[in-house]
Image: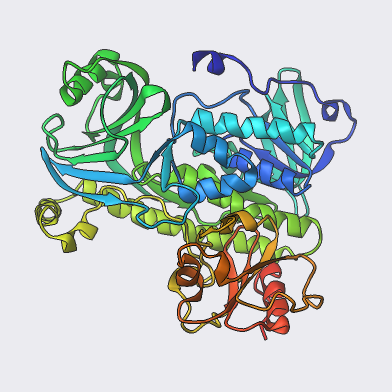
Length: 542
């Protein structure tokens, strides 16, 4: 990958905005061309929203950084036009194993049921994820989408007004000013925009350090997630092993708190640790090494007037559980359709407030799970360690104890149970997994998959409902998806969406979360639920 790192993928080019007397104004300016910023820029461009994406860099991220991309992220990526490319390059996996010392405690399957287009996870270096996104950006630009990507543009100043945001950007040709109706900060954990506005995180920083190493090696290990508690090669600590494409393996080793970080990153010391783990007969080369500290923190609010924060700039969690990039892409997915509706005038600004409430809720869920994982992996007291070790001993022999083992609860999509956009559930006996607020669950059909039928607009899913029913009285923004039992290959459609009911109607948001559901077709109820979802929850459903 060295050639890719050394080649500017979006080099600085002088733009006409730099030669105007007055600052030019754009609908959306996104700062940060990482996974989150790219995902949001693509989403908006596909919806025809004029967007400028700026970054002080000119290429993909160094090192693999994020590597585990969850099924939900792949489903979002399908709608962004890059899902298959990611799956083709990535290493697919669904099986994890947990060890203590040299004993296998148990194993788990993250996607034991059939009928899903995408796997539970793929492992893929972040630079490949970003490269796929950048290729999609180029395709959209060639198709005339209103999307600009400006490399070598560093935000030097931010000033928030009631109806826009002013920015000053530094470039190799000097500074220039720019205005935005909406500024989206996807500029990472150290977010200069957050600092410029005097905002900060709240949360915990854990007193522990972890060595993260990407090594190139030909090893005959299975494609699984392996996690060790107290392994013989790292006594009293933990370890994690994952396979990535190109024979690159990700290894995490717990180091403890009181360490010499510079010394631990020296190649000779890293190699010594890896030799102890892998054995002297395994030959490898180091590709990337870093040391990180667990942090579980977030901003109090993600929206500040016309400035919105997403991804690491808004929240941070420990790497165990793969919640960083995955939750950031879900931020982008949540925000994109809402920005479009507000900019196009079909929704009030209150709809953007629902981004804050829903994604703060999602961040809190991730932080809670990440904190619990960290506390289990690194007990903070002798009593906590006794409990942890007892759980591991029981889990080896008794299934009831296995849910108590926490080696990093892996990323799951958030269910917005308390979203203001939800209409109260009208399917009393409906399946819990497809209740209002939940993301749609995929189903294999005789001609494809359910999620493939849901586009980037509101969708009305009619199950065993007469397809001749007129929908003229329902807003034209809704796509109609009509399904019946004859399309269901395995019975999963009924199990996941009908339960004990014989028919159902689902109103599905553009981000494929369920806004409302009913057991019968009622045009007035559907229209009211759509209004509620677009109004940010300020309307009452009839």
